[in-house]
Each structure stands twice: as C-alpha cells, then as structure tokens.
Length: 78
Image (cartoon, rainbow, N blue to C red):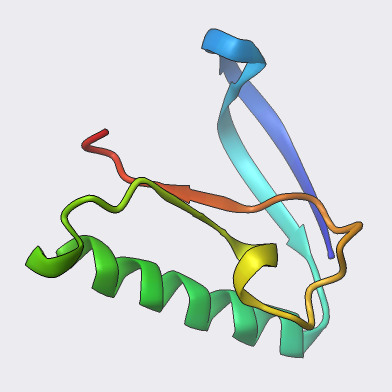
C-alpha cells in the first residue's frame, strides 16, 4: 500500500494539510481500509467511546504490511 498527495499547507509538528490523497493498494487492502473507517465512524458516533482519540490502520488490520505508510484516524473534536 502506498499513499501519495499534494500538500495544501504545513501545520504544526510537520503535518501537512492535504489537497489531494492518492491510494495505491490491492483490493483486499482497500476493503480492509473501508472496514476500518466504518469501525472508526461507529466509535466516533458512539457515546460509549466519547474518549476516542485516534486509531492506526496497521494496528487494526493484520494484513496491512508493517512497512506500509501509517494511516491514522483522529477525532476531530480532540
């Protein structure tokens, strides 16, 4: 899996706000990513998980290679 992008602007801690993201991945990895995103959305919308801060795709999907770029979902309210 690879990620490519075009930066819109630089933020704190070296982060870049992206104007565009391109994902190059096998179908099974894209399906795993879709499932991961749905799970994160469920956690964010659940009152039981109001303390959700962030989740790493590679920590949740065993089939994602450890040398793949990190894909992290962050709670926008944190």
